[in-house]
Amino acid sequence: MTDDGPTLTRRAALALLGTAGTALALGRTALAQATVPTAPAPTFSGPGPLTAWNGLGPLIALPQKVPLIRLVDRPPLYETPRAYFQSPFTPASAFFVRSNLSIFPASIDLTTWRLRVAGNVRTPVSFSLAELLQNFEPVSVNAVLQCSGNSRTRFQPRRPGGQWGNGAMGCATWTGVRLRDLLKKAGVKSGSVQVQFQGLDKGAGAPGSGGAEYKKSLDLNDPVLDECIVAYAMNGQPLPLVNGFPVRLVVPGYFATYWMKTLSFIRVLTEPDTNFWMATAYLQPDNPRGTTTPQAVKDKKVKFRPVSSMPVRSFIVTPDETVKVPAGLPVTVQGLAMSGRGAVTKVEVSTDGGRTWRAASLGEDHGRYAFRPWSFAWTPKTAGQYTLAVRATDASGVTQTDQPIWNPSGYLWNTIERQTVTVGQAG
Ligand SMILES: Nc1nc2c(c(=O)[nH]1)N[C@H]1C(S)=C(S)[C@@H](COP(=O)(O)O)O[C@H]1N2
Ligand SMILES: [Mo]
Image 1: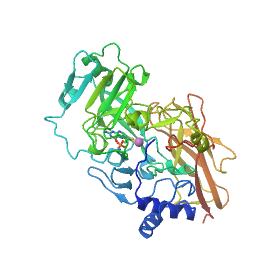
Image 2: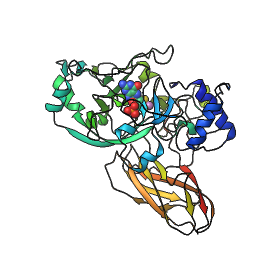
Image 3: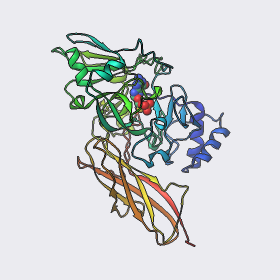
Image 4: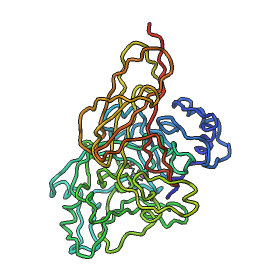
């Protein structure tokens, strides 16, 4: 469990928004931030859940990036605006940014940079970027990267941490070297249990946590290891530095916490990793949905385990709350769906707030770990307020529900998303 460190200003802004109890468009957000810098920090037992699609913050551009919604500056939490999700692939320049430690490298010297593989191996090895590019078979995967705290603003009672709307996710074509090929070069010795990953970022981490080095580990017998890629390209281009240049780990279907940026150290371990980022942070209740209650946590009745695969989710991208739809004319409702637990098999849309559902058409299949676009033709007959909702089903047989999720860290939100639309008289 970890506090992503919202600023006082953000908390204050959230308090105001919560009291107002409204879903806000971005314009009003900036106003709220500007007018309440000194309001007291609320507790996270209130205010109510935020329902705006995106988190709330100013649009700020980091180096190599387009303006993104800044939630926190240091460590950086920048969210991708909704409009970029009109495509099932997210441009690298618009990809969300999140780091747990405050000091991220400002440059990488490729003449000295090496990716090292060490620990319980026959031969410790290291690779330059050129060697990774030239000496290994390149492989690609289309995969969604999603923060485990994506949509944390939906939690009720509210949870501390980055107050993400839905934009702490993105999908890219990742190209690089199979992790297994690198491990093979080093030769994993018997008695090994996990493989640990570390990048180049530094900083104190949560106060008193001992989390000054961001290290994540995967079990050597986890089948996901066979699909892991050490990626040097994102949509065919080098990764932006803040998204992990020169290489990052890609763990298809798993939450982003394992997708180590500026990956530079791979260590084969003979004991399970008990560092802060494995044993204390990024834990979910030990059930598939990752849900429990505040009372059960208080009573110490909850068994936790590290987060791993992402549950099925779906999102309405257009129309958004700024669009006025004319009655009697067709409008296409569009969006994306995804699951880390099996391909998306069905998407359904409701135009009556979730009472009745009809199948949406699935768009092009870019692979089981990618965003699956969907669309739904809708002709609202009469003027008025409508509530659209979307739910997806994946190959594991799970369909999204209205049941909220609750856990102390605000992870794994996948409840049905809704969107209000105003339909006006045509002509
Ligand atoms: N080196 C490094 N890699 C990291 C992290 C980090 O703090 N340091 N954070 C992880 C988390 S929690 C997330 S959500 C993603 C964010 O990736 P992005 O910034 O490319 O969107 O990176 C993951 N990999
Ligand atoms: Mo994250």
